[in-house]
Image (cartoon, rainbow, N blue to C red; front, side):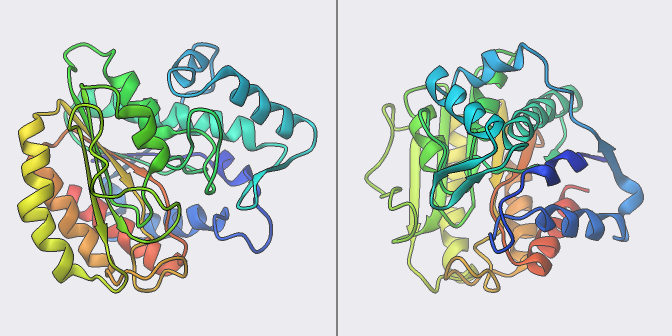
Length: 303
């Protein structure tokens, strides 16, 4: 069985009619999973309702000023953090629930010592400590990593970000922690303009692998073999968190990388060769059919 943490409340973060990060992303994936051949092997879980102590975990990654700003925008009718990042009246509450889901995911993985998948939105890897940006409100993966470090027996956490865009927020938050490693493979140049190979963190705990437009699986595979897997294996993490963005697909409208859905099944197999204690959490991916097929490939590999 594979736990998948999901709530219909994640659909209530409204981004506008033509925004690529739309509720239909989750609806399409849920439909695909519920009609898949392996549907009976999925254990659907709803996230823990937001409790007061959740805020202490969010504050490990974000400033109180930013958290209050985001809440104010939502409760006064909505608005924008930047031109790409809308906030609707329900967005603050939904973003809190998304963080709760990621922390539930950590608990599931650690208790079962097997993978779990968080199917939540809004995404998080662009959100920096003092602002959201790039469709992201709270830095879900970074908060989950910091939470995991406080759990019994967890001394080191690795984050692998295979979203097509560099996770500037995740990197900025975790790179000063020697107990956390961050690896990102992303199109470069592309939004947000960060993620150069020279960015290696405060403790050589960051590995950025910028990829030129037009890259496909033939470019990715040697990076896995000679860069990513040695980096992850040498770090000896007690938990692997995957920022699972599916916008490096040929069909995706927001980038120019030419992966296919089945490639993410291969990436998942590589990760499972490092550890079975993996939390996958949705980041990007904006073409609904290829997004759904890619999540299917990831889940199949886990099963």
